[in-house]
Length: 515
Ligand SMILES: *[C@@H]1O[C@H](CO)[C@@H](O)[C@H](O)[C@H]1NC(C)=O
Ligand SMILES: *[C@@H]1O[C@H](CO)[C@@H](O)[C@H](O)[C@H]1NC(C)=O
Ligand SMILES: *[C@@H]1O[C@H](CO)[C@@H](O)[C@H](O)[C@H]1NC(C)=O
Ligand SMILES: *[C@@H]1O[C@H](CO)[C@@H](O)[C@H](O)[C@H]1NC(C)=O
Image (cartoon, helix red, strand yellow):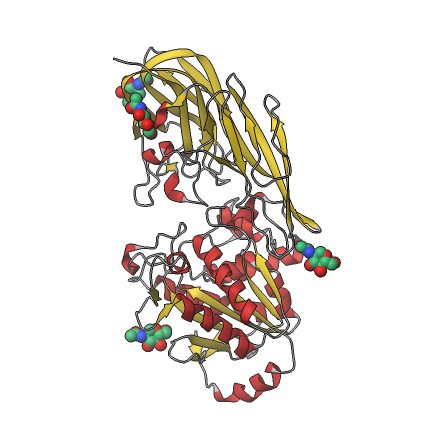
């Protein structure tokens, strides 16, 4: 970034401000715009709209000492200059919110393009923050776990109310008729980065206070990687080259088509999806431990109350059983139907579709395991060939009772460090267990997948495990009852895109034997 005189551009800015159409994008990190809101962003630049992008976090990834986040800002500038097809020369000013330090950069060759950086700390994927920035995160601010949040250099701080007001004022100053942000429809833990959701929740609220007529579009983040590719040809190549222009400044992402392979960035670049308007179903099972296991002949309650409705239309519910012994629901159209589980062990699956007026959600699925056995994995001691302790992806997380993991809650899964075939997970019990079935859940991200494994028991016998579902659905393996004090899960093959194999969860059903 070079700096030029700002004066020449001011008159031009004023003319444009009140004549052409404005797109204000508010995202979390210096590449969310390029990965998730483009090619809409590219089209807005190409058609001459006035475009301003506001980045809430510094995108520091907890690294404040190597100039990493400053480089990401430079990367954003390079990408916008490339998209606008002018030199990477910017004029620095301030966004003009009283009491807040918000650098605003205007592109010298196309002054209707500008970038503002709030420089709040990167909240880490699960919202836990990084120790270097006091473990602060936007999610903690949103959820009132912290009273305020400071910029990475400590020069400005925001309470939750001040951040909301700042965003509303940025809207008011810029007068957008289009506001773009990330996914404000889904809840935390549904596969996207905590900062993406939180940024979008703040933007949706701020947009509610902004009275100029406008459209609000929320773009789906990480989870688009499992949706159908919908960008091709020019849109795809232009989106890629803008991202690669940015990537030359970011050491943590891939830098060209060959280097990206079929990894996350490659998948995101091939897609753009918006969330606006659609309701989102959330199907859960109400049990004391929040788990999928219920007893035999037990009363079971399904719960759809966490479904999200982006507007004020009435939400309706439709439950359908798609697997297992047929049961009778108290009602298939209430938010919380109940039923009696079978008298014998079985796995039941239900889907929930919610509808608001004219729009239906995609189906959400909930699995109910009826068993007279207990998940004895919870009581095992566990060890792995390797584990990523730094990010909380430890062996213990494979038996924490929660099926989750990157790109959702990383600390709820086990991930090896570079482990592929040959990786092992060993469960050991203080007393022998009589066990007869295992449920395995792959890491939820699409890159890492177990495609074959074995489980060895103390007596030398073993069972073969087929490829695990790549989207986190359980693989159930039943076998003749074994009495054992340990079992070894050994990965024998992985998908070609696997970097760090692991498991979201392992459940082992059996009974505790007295010594
Ligand atoms: C903090 O960053 C802002 C924005 O880049 C800058 O204007 C300010 O001078 C910095 N403050 C300190 C204390 O370094
Ligand atoms: C349903 O249709 C009406 C009229 O076409 C529209 O105004 C409204 O936004 C739609 N609702 C949803 C949830 O899409
Ligand atoms: C196993 O762990 C559960 C809690 O996870 C506990 O309630 C139960 O008593 C434990 N059983 C044994 C035999 O240790
Ligand atoms: C599991 O692996 C560990 C470590 O390699 C070994 O000590 C143990 O005997 C194995 N147990 C079984 C049941 O294969």
